[in-house]
Length: 346
View 1: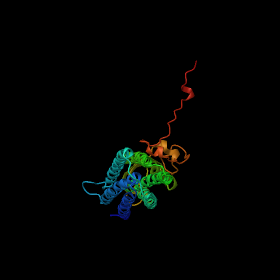
View 2: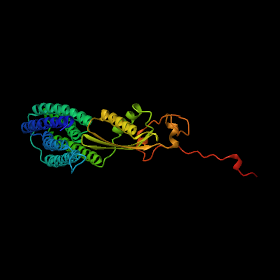
View 3: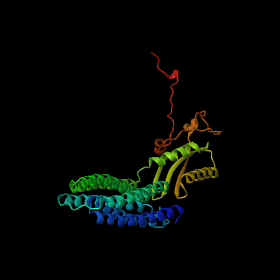
View 4: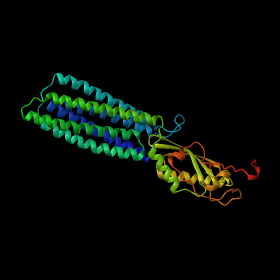
């Protein structure tokens, strides 16, 4: 298990322990208050705990090294974990709506709401801090499972804040002698819908990752790297593909080099390009570089002194994400001129 994978796995342990502790605290708050809105928060915490342990197993499996059956490693299990977690969030939202509708028509007694509000507020603060830390760490190490866990915790926090605001209204209404039990159930229904929508978003993002959707931010980072650290002999780069495997990354590209370059020199250029990419994205990056010789139309983009030059050097190519993803090299248009002597005369 490499350092990044172990760090993700250890952080997921923290999420699991925090999630279980907060779930217990929220059920205590529900027992004290009888509030359906607080029960909504507690039920979502069950999903948090189960999802945390699913993510923990996914991160453990993702950290296993490649083998004969899985030559690219086991990182894709993190996408499966994120899909499972999103599905559980969606189911939790549906159950919350169902229970809230039943409670709307048969409201129970609400009591000790002040204590319940304090407990839920403290739990929300802890959830938010851990969730944001998980998202930052997951993005830094490119871990879909850790990002999904962090987003889940943050969505739990946002729903908790809404529940707290709604229960403050209920608390004020009860203090003035009004029957506000219906409002408690209404708040739970609203946030059940919000929770379900969050689950759908997590599922959609995990499906995109499973289908190897381009990460525009990573592509832009690589384009900036190539432009900043380019060698004079790197004439063109095209057919770039980047695939995420959990916290790992696979980079495939074609590199145009001068046609008179020796095999040894070509290998050196490939190695230095690979080292630059690993410096930027980490040692877990798997890189495949296909070198190809230039042609006479590329002279304007190459400043190398060689016997094959047909045209003066004009400028180096400036690569953008769109250019790097093109399937062919960026050959300038071929100009065709017609000798005046060959033109027909009237």
